[in-house]
Image (cartoon, rainbow, N blue to C red; front, side, top):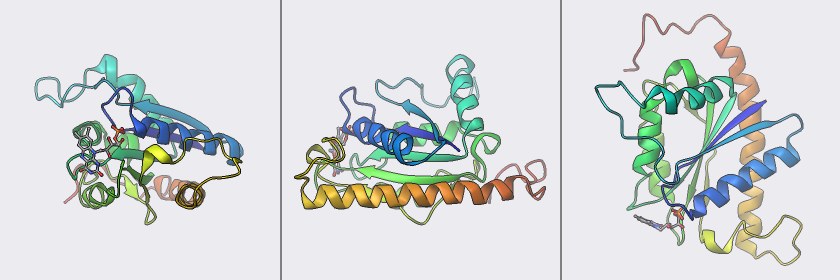
Length: 202
Ligand SMILES: Cc1cc2nc3c(=O)[nH]c(=O)nc-3n(C[C@H](O)[C@H](O)[C@H](O)COP(=O)(O)O)c2cc1C
């Protein structure tokens, strides 16, 4: 099973990237046969969607597109910024097509330095998948007080209660995501999907 992980912070020293790397490490360690690809939006590598090119330039998007097409499941990690998912995450979802991620399961993981993180869950559940047909799984994970969590290696004896709880929750969500990954493969090969007749969602 192949997992595509997006780190959605534009900041170079992003805590979100730490969380995305933690997700990648858990998948490598605890999911036999899992392959991962981590894509980071640190430094804004993708320009805002532009009408003249119809999306990100091919030279930037083609390698990402190939990884998305190869993936069975996605993990989208976004910080809460101003009570929102980042502009980079929304721009990324705008660039994604159903050909790349349609009917693949997505896990939302949000990140906050404090007690935030709920708004981007609500935002992503409501928008960003109409045309690309990504399927958010019902479980999501909110990483709060991120600077105090997910830093120490697993197995560290004196993890705080919140840290231990968040790690457990993240592991559970990733195990579920893998099962949705297997299940939705059936949908994609069913022959029912008709993107020619219905290129856009309603
Ligand atoms: C522009 C900006 C807006 C932010 N707004 C929020 C917010 O609305 N809620 C919140 O919990 N944290 C907010 N934060 C703090 C983030 O939770 C914090 O930066 C955290 O480390 C995750 O972001 P990072 O991955 O960029 O490090 C904001 C940070 C930035 C840079």
